[in-house]
Image 1 (cartoon, rainbow, N blue to C red):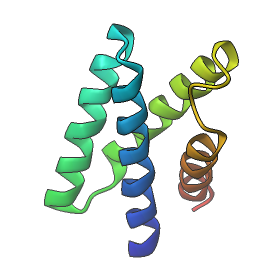
Image 2 (image 1 turned 180 degrees about the vertical axis):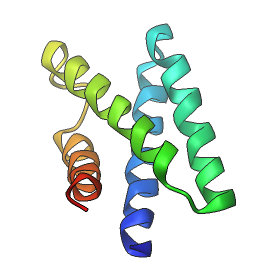
Image 3 (image 1 turned 90 degrees about the horizontal axis):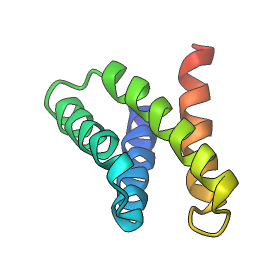
Image 4 (image 1 turned 30 degrees about the vertical axis):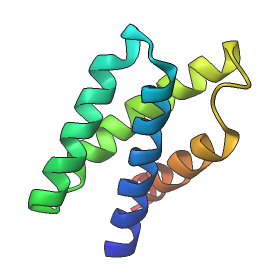
Length: 90
C-alpha cells in the first residue's frame, strides 16, 4: 500500500505542475487544495483527502484536455487515473 501511496503523491504532484503551467484562475483553488492535501498526507500518511482531491484534479484535467488536447499530456492523466482506480478497487 505504501508504494501505491507514493505513486498517488507523485501523480498528484504532476497534476499540480500541470495546473501551474496552465496559469488559469479556474484551477487555482483546485491546485491549492491538491498542494494542501499532499502536505497533509506527508504529515499523517492518510491518503483519503489526496484520493478525493486527486479525483477532482483528474476530472478537471480530462475536461481541459478535450478542449485543449496538446496542453495536458496523456501520460499525466493516465498515471493519475491508474492510481486512483487502484484505490477504488480496494
